[in-house]
Length: 329
Image (cartoon, rainbow, N blue to C red; front, side, top):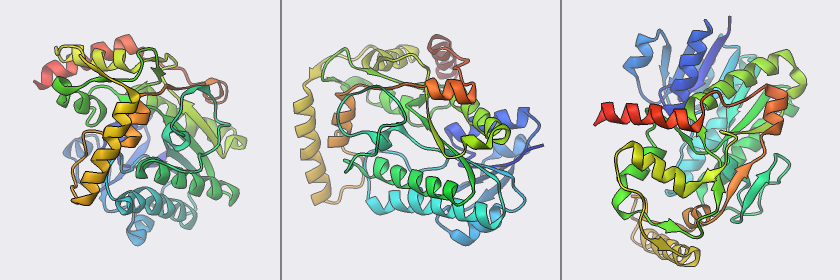
């Protein structure tokens, strides 16, 4: 029986992983900032704390054999220190706690944004290097976290790094709500034919459990990085409109050029920085680059090594999302 710990077990992806682990008969501990009654109802042991607190993490990881490090600070805006605190220091403490507690296996949740250089990324694989510089704290700190995990691999920890892109589905508290909240003022940025990968949350959770299973069966996979997705690139505007339709909202109207969006992002960043405004700007340079480019990835390696295939199609996922949204109105 697996004795697993999930960082961020109360979050969107973390909770999906916890649910699937429980179905396998695993004993599960969640390490999160907050306490979640629904985890208690599932019989999950909960430890509350800050991942950047080395001593708390060290103590929480006792008697664990497999760690799923899912927790991170997401977003496109905020002080670099906050992202560094959560994503870099947090990952370093997770790795050190694994070594100190003689934990064998670590599955680390990363992001394709760690290789984003501002241009189109079409059918690229895991060989693409990190860019020289980043336009936002999130991808930079997630890249640093990846490097920490890779270094741990060379030091003897058995690891796999997964890069899911644009996770969505019922109970989403980030991507879908953000689109629905901005429904009336959303505009298409750049061209219509740019494609992106997405991944339904249960498929992302499946990939994490497969990674842990295959790593134990074949330790030579340790240190590998894998893109995971729906394996079905789609126009980001078509996908956004599908989310809006699931909430019975009208499609996106209006359009701005990539250059206009980039200039707007630079302006807002300047103003928000100058006046120390904490809330997220309507546009940033990083967001403008992402919205105006393609980013979809070759997942052949995940198929071959992990046996990963998306069990829930995008069509089925959207039906489930619509059903969930209808219950939350």
